[in-house]
Image (cartoon, rainbow, N blue to C red; front, side, top):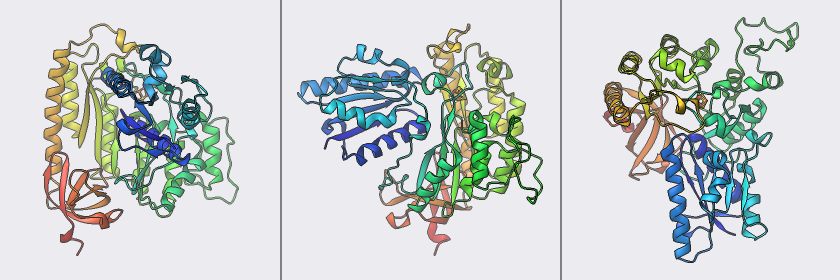
Length: 486
Ligand code: SF4
């Protein structure tokens, strides 16, 4: 059977999609090639969020086909994912040696299409059409020894986004929001727990919108599961039965819970699972029910990623983000009240069109106030077919770079202080396995999502253990388990 090599660009969703494609191909008898140069099939799972990511994938493909041709090797090559979706056939027009272009709703068709290409039945395949229920097709896992995957796993719960932030290409590449059902997600999580997975990260473009487009289904599914922690109607569920519970049931709480919080409750009930995380949420999704979930669900790790994007209300409005800086800071205050010590990270864009020095100063001041544990900073990159690309007052590149540099300095200073505060403290980590860079060391993660390195070996993999933090490095803690785990 042929061997396949998959190279992934971009976010955790893409990593997860690649994993599911690889698992699907393994199940059909393919093997995973150790490198692209010896593979019969090479797939590039692409990202469109920034122009640079697209250029990288196109250049990579050029090199691949050039090398294969010069070495007279027959190799099937294809693009998957976001750039495949947004550019479609144009990619084959531009690079005629490309055999396969597979959009974001078609990952589950990879094996079928590769069979057709390898057998010579078809010469080129481009499929970027929408497909109903494709959100439920990303479910196979590779739990075969990669340090992180055997202990913790990502579970895709929904795809697409209806938010239409003016800078973002995701609604065009991933389509409208589509969520899996709660029983379907729970079944996958339960199976992972039975296979030894201790930590699950629920994954989606905008996870806090889970089930919003399928309220009735999510609601009914939650009832089927007996999840009555919040037996009241989800927001906006006016068309649902007003009293779905039998008369003998306990009185209904007055606060509604979103389908996403219902899902958290259902996953939390799975025996054997120790930790739950999720990414990426939208700040608008942090209602009181989600803040309460942090306070009442012990398996939900005290870690939250809240994409800020800008600290200026004027820019937030231009971005179509749907919250203000005060609202954002209010969420952080509530989360810290619910879970003191919670690790909070964010994403920020600098140099959005029209961003003045005053707007940027607002972002700096919000960062000082919020004291993020880490921030992923992006220089604004115009994306075609997004409203922001045509906005006036595009910020010149040198200014974007200078603001990026200043913000990075501030964020790193704050983060270093927060990391230093861990020295001398005892923390619980989940050990993912030997470190990729140094096999004599193990990598673990604290509940607040900080990486901890310690001297250890494969025997520690999968253990929940306490370590004492002795020193810090760049966004890393160094611990000694011997001090607390004799
Ligand atoms: S919420 Fe996130 S994925 Fe959706 S449009 Fe905005 S930035 Fe893009």
